[in-house]
Length: 346
Image (tube, rainbow, N blue to C red; front, side):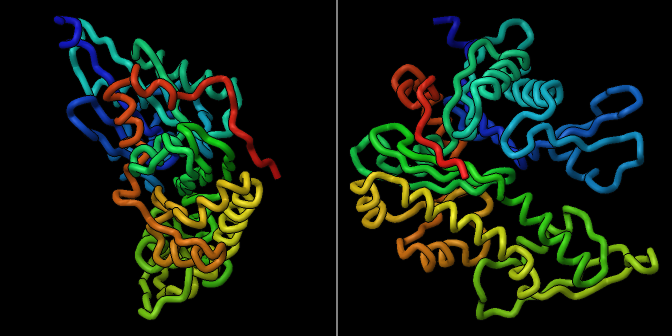
């Protein structure tokens, strides 16, 4: 059919930190930071994605680096629309005719208004249809867990803005928890610790580098350290210090404790039969936070259940959205409907 030539089915993981795009029959074609550089004087968008990330902490007063999603929720509708339009344009530049159906991942705890704003942003960006899928369901699909079977699949998606914890059975979320403690919060913890401990001001890119290179959830055999540069709070001049892995572990320990407690609470509230399945099947971790050294060991030690980081942990949400994208009609049961899973609100 000639319409199929113009039709594009697209899966999007619109994350707080990074956004990934999957196109049917082509796979993952885009992985860019969810950042936009805007000229405050003219309102003009100067850069999106990777180009905008290079400017973080280095812009003059009239240029703002905007992250249009905060804690997985759209905070700036217009910028989010522009970000999505940029992605759709990269996927297909055909101006003559473009019919796109977009499957997009959303956190489990979004209100109906917040879900509607995601749909509206996708449609305003130029898509013909928008379908929402809850991120834990997409992550479990992408990790090839047995989500259709009457057994528990527990997934913990540690993203940039939120940590999504869910128990999935029979193709749906039985119980979920969305925690606003994730990668960005760990960066903030590190910035605050370096400021208090070393009297040195550093930016988010440096904090991210410290977390990735020498950060760990538990004490490691290998002694890691990293030299960093920043602004001395006393003199205002540049200064270099050496930060050890133990410092970073100390900085992020409270946030990691909150994540572990949230996982425990989710298991405690799950139906008993599914808790038995979790003990047998284990807990599966995905997202950037799961790649922190020793993260799976910490969770395994604290909840006495085997914890496994899934393959390609950074891409499993978009791969799950891609599985739905490959046959939307067949996988429509996974799309977010009006019925909400049981949520834990503390």
